Image (cartoon, rainbow, N blue to C red; front, side):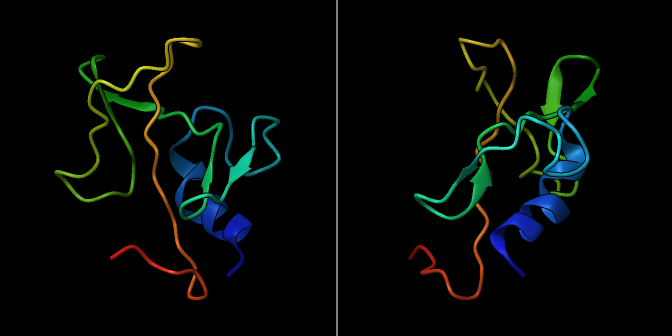
Length: 88
């Protein structure tokens, strides 16, 4: 899979911007793994806890990571292809 396909499969379904990379907010970053710079968590529990759909319990909560410019909750999820050098 290409990095764009991986982002569409794993990040886009839980994002408020759209269900694919044609959302208008898609901006790829590959400095350390692959991710979308426009990804914003869209699911909440009790309107206060933001979670990333598809991640296992304990790893899906965002914590206090509000973007000060936009006021949106972001979670920097990094994805790796088979060709990427994985972190140690």
